[in-house]
Image 1: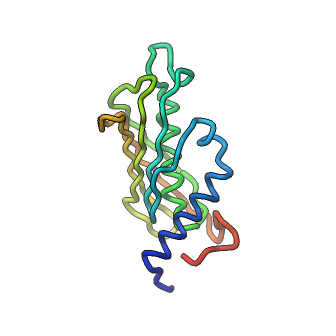
Image 2: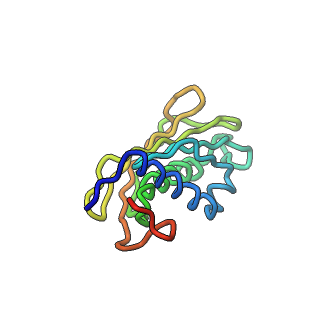
Length: 152
């Protein structure tokens, strides 16, 4: 197995980000922006819109979860090995309101063989934690996000 330089790994993550985002209608439709990407990490931002509010005038938990899941997806696919979620657990810690800028930061905890574990924190524009999520991933053997396969 060849070693990949940090610069090559970063280029792979950026290429995967561009390829994934181009086809990611859900993230684009919710106004998400990929703010940062790296091997095993991603930061995704979204502004809470009025149509994302529930009956209590706070952001519906499903939108917060979707933001966290998108950051998770970009982080775990950053090596160009097609990877899907095998499970998530989300804890909501504070409400988000219309106009809030939410940022989901995903960080790889462990990646062994075809499985990975990622922690994702969702914060608002004041840095207050709104939600935390732990995601488990499963890489699909021999499949890539971006073709032709990158070296990574």
